[in-house]
Length: 228
Image (cartoon, rainbow, N blue to C red; front, top):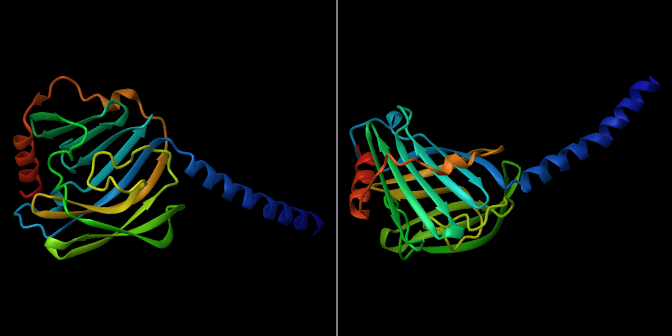
């Protein structure tokens, strides 16, 4: 009985330590992956959603990020590489045997993503725990579309300029639940897991077998892929 009591006391001492270690390690991540579930809304197309991109993985290391929006078939998808220190954003598209890329100025939103100009972002005092992170809520409104949406973001992850390559640049935090307008569809992203793991440098190098095209061509191709 005495040993059982001692063991119980040890558990009470150790458990809070484990909890704080888990929180500390998660908040100190500066290299790893964030996995998101993709949901399509208002999509008017023939191809069923099950064959459309269903996951997005954001990999980050040394303030570089790559956003991978991929389909369940093959390795098709859109890949956006951001390097804020170099003021460089590259968009790659792989569909079947076609490989294209576009590199534009650092101050523009990558092709395929609606910049949502004129949107209003209202920061709120609402805070919630999502995936063991302290997350804040902001309300996005697009007046000309009579549209509003609640997004969630966190300041706990060690990524500088996390929204350098998307319409939410005014938010200084990693997006956890949010949306993009791509083609005629609204695409919702919901974080399902955050993982601390080594990211090889070669992940940010897509190779030389991609053919460079202009922005309009890339915009048209991505819109077509999202609205098949």
